[in-house]
Length: 101
Length: 223
Image (cartoon, rainbow over all chains, first blue to last red):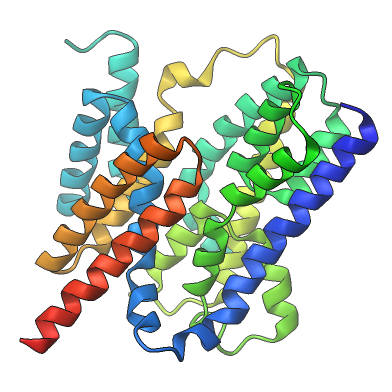
């Protein structure tokens, strides 16, 4: 790949990405005036997160699911994101170092 | 701004190690440091940067590479639509500046805190800057110390990203209807990810899942 092509890619993607970031925010007030769009958008944060993380967690295999369940339980009990996250990572670490099962 | 920065520190560790991996790949694929930094500063969206670097070595056309990378970032449009309340009293200048620094991580942390605490757009900006710095630092270290670094994957650090989002999702759970929506969305996402083999599945699944939630809540109202 030549340098000029690389620069072209970087700036085209940069402009496209920036446009997406800004237009979502600027259009949202107009979008929300449409019927139902408001309640549709309200559930977006949760569904977007699920769509983003569930397939890769499933790909991690059984241990991905087990680690996630632990994260949920610790989160409900402690309400501490950092603690829950660390326990999830620790379980994956144990499994990858063959210290589990 | 400081609070936003501090709240994002835990997850910035995962961004940092993810950055190391990208830095190493760029080094081995003879992308120069300036190009990597231009990507970091102007694109600042990790997954699409990985895709660009990966596609470069596969001899694909420019338009394919650009199109795919932008498609992956389509979710930022949806993310933008969830932030309008936060930006209610902001000037257009603030909107244009701060939105560039929005990432999955800082957005999720902001959405978690938005209901409980009285936070402003500066919380979002502080978080974005925290992620921005750890991304620059991580990719730089990966780039310059490529030969010395032991695979961060061995420590499970790549899972921090998912673990954090699982924790945040737990806080978004409110009613039994949500549980139904969550499961349906997860199911749709798993199917579409297999079918499409392209990151657009994230967008489609999120929209279908929200549509499902809308229909279900509508039914409850009607009864």
